[in-house]
Length: 386
Image (tube, rainbow, N blue to C red; front, side, top):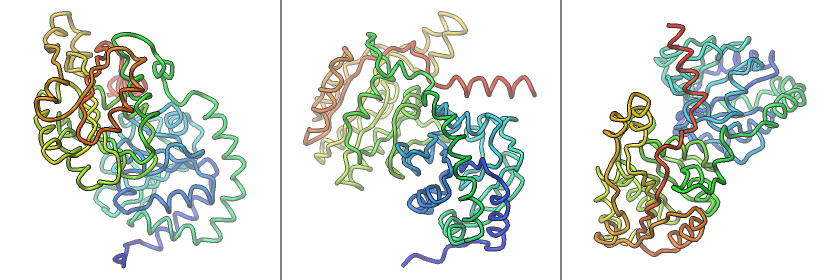
């Protein structure tokens, strides 16, 4: 039996009144929604009232990204749809479900995140209210319990159902645009391979139930933007820190915890230099973890910044090109090197069919720009304003 879930019913009633007064309402889901196990209720709530849903990067998958009401990720490596809905000036009200509204989850504290009806922050921890970003209404409560109370409110149902067609027209105007900022890169035939092509082809081959662990680096931005997550806790990334190499070991743990699901680690050569030895743990226990190494012979994020300073600065962030297939085989794993994008699909299919760990050494373009243009522009706006 589930333990009692805390919810301030009076505050939820006030939230229902506020929501009933507005039409263009956006739900922004953070990790609190994942921790409360709210995803099923969230889908029911969004569908009942026809509400578009964005998630933070950490909560990616808490709302299925192939759903008609999904806007994708808002903030760092976020989608065009989420940015347009939350910062485009047409949202009346934003309801934040379990996010602390930190720098990443507010598009660098954007002044454009100011809907006329305000921001409602729902969280079990009242100390987060307004701590990182000012809000207008607060609800102390478990996200799932809060949504359950709102679903049972017949007055809210009547009010929101009346505005559902208006919201659909608004959502249509957003979704007519490409979801991704650089969708053409997903089918790029360039050599070295574009990282977006790697992620797109990987998602196309990976089973629906795949658990992906994304390491810290430029590959985090590419995967966050181009990978669609369908279930909570199927997309795992340590987004608040930069612990390079953590995903290599975490992927081993994920396969032990969820032996019935395929597990893939998206990492880089810099991360492998730090914790690649954990491939041996997967081999020792016969765990079929797929290690996708985006091998660009550089510390990607550092290199992309450093090269703008000078050629010599960029050179300091380059790495010797290592053979990660040979490395994996020395530890008991199988593997393949991929240098032509046309070979990606077959390589992924072979990796997922393997009975033990499989290392894919994919030679990628270190100069490929990460899909964070909107985030970068938002950071520039904040710096100019302060």
